[in-house]
Image (cartoon, rainbow, N blue to C red; front, side, top):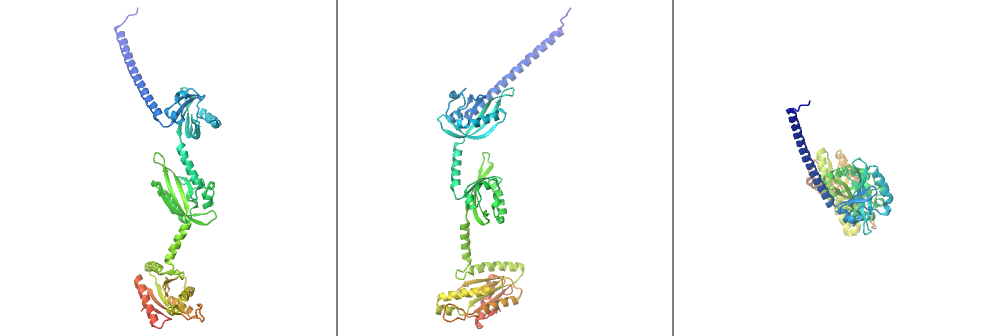
Length: 448
């Protein structure tokens, strides 16, 4: 016979209490879970309602299950007009592509950034970028698709405008990524550099830069990574046929929403003509227009450099001052045209006998200077002076009835014996020139 013991009652009560407690905690947890799910659903609904990207969900038969307000605004169809009906935004021209995309989705693959033109309710086509993901049921089977669409109409319009400009401008337009790889090149590259755009795409930008400018350009490009503003660079480029041209390039950086550099738009222009003009002006600043030789300004510049180098290398050089002994008489009696011709012929004769390390300058009128930048000894300088005097002994044919005799006087100062600065060296060469004139002309004198 079964006997109910009081200890059994205790055990039953304990089990009941535990069951009640477990039930309480389960209900509490279930309530918290429901609350969390409701909050999550509210947040998700808020995101879907306020995002600017259009979102639509369709089943496997392309029947619309959901569209958000942005979809209504972007495409013009209201939710009630499309719900449980075929998705109306795909134009007939994209049906074949749509089937290919559908096969990809059914294979479990997402579609990222499909750029196409989709249909609005009013019949207009708009440029869009679409990302589509497959949706799965609890058993893992695909039972629908979710699409997020971004309206790219304005961006595409800007791109088309830029492309139209790029295709028709004489400037070279390139799009290069942050690593310097060319992504786009305008047709003008064919005209300016001789390369078609297809030859350039995929190559690194420094490839056609002149070897002497390439290292500097690569360093400047690396430095641009830290700059957020337009950068201007000048360098030489090599044409396909081998000749060199000067290019001015403006690099305009572009950044993504996170502030990360994505690419550069580069606009380049051939400035060879401008560079040659600038060089011509620079040359004219240092050249005598009558004789074509270096002028007084060039003498000051080159003499300053020579003094500095010679002082550092502890070497000697010589400075000649000379003028034409009968120039004033020729100018006054035969006219300035004959005088100019005398100066031109005098210049030519002197240049013919000068050594390679000597430079001739015209200081003005009939005054000239010669810089012998390197000298082995006094014998070298003396030979140069004697050669100049000798070549001027021959008569001059200047368009007159009779040949004319015209010689010159030369004064010479030596560095560092006669001075260690420009002013002193020039002053002592001038003193030596007056000594040569005082001695009877047609001779040379060293500074004493």
